Image (cartoon, rainbow, N blue to C red; front, top):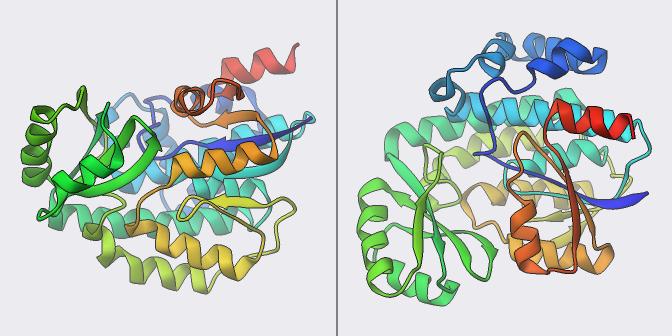
Length: 302
C-alpha cells in the first residue's frame, strides 16, 4: 500500500529512544552499532539514557532522531509499506531522503552530524529560542515581528505558526502577540533560533558537506519544505536542502501538496507530533503513526 511518508524533526526526541528496538530487532541493533562507528562516539548511550537535557542538545538530538526514524522506516518498509512520496519537517527531511533512496544511511548520517554541529555552534553565539503561536495568522505575526530579529520560522497550519529569534526578542515579541490576540504562546524544547537568519553562519559547513555528497535520483519524489516543491532531481534537492537551514519551513503548503498526490499519511519519528497538525490542515486526510517499538510490534502482528 502506498502512502505519503512524513518524518518528524527536532523536538520529537524522547529519553530512552531506540533501546527497545535495539534489544529486540537485529536491524535496529546493526544500524545503531553502525551509527556509533560512523560518528566516532556512542550516540546509543545518549539515546538510551534518561537524561533529556543531554539528548535535547542539537548536536545529539538531530543525529538521534535521524537514526531512529530511519530504523522505523526500514522495519515497516520491509513489511510492504511503500511510500508514494516523502517529506520531512525540517530535520525530518534528511530521514525522508534516506527513505526515498536519495542517499545511503551513512551519507545522511554524516550530513546530519555536520549540520547538527554547525547549528550547535550558532546556538552558543546567539542564545536563540523558538515558540509556537496559536490562533493568529502569518501576516499579523510577521507585522509584529518587523524591526526585531524574530521571524516566522515554521508555518505548520493556518493557526499554528512558529517564530524564531534571540531569547530577548522572542520574549518581547511574545508579549506583544498575546496583547494583540494570540490565543497561546508555547515555548518549544529546542535550544536555538532555527530557520532564522541567526542560523546563517551554519550554512557554509552544510553547503560543503552536501555539495560533496553523492545524491542519487530517488525512486519516489520528495516535497521540499523550503518551498513546498515536488523534486526528484538530485542537484535541485541539494540546493533546497541547503536553503532550508535559515529559511522558514512551509509545512502547511507542503502537506497540501502531498495531499494532491495521496491523502493517506504515515508519520515516522520518536513521538507523534505531526499527526495533529495534519488533521488541522484537512480533516479528510487519513494518518497513522509509527513512533515506538510497541507501534512496530502491533503492526507486525496484525
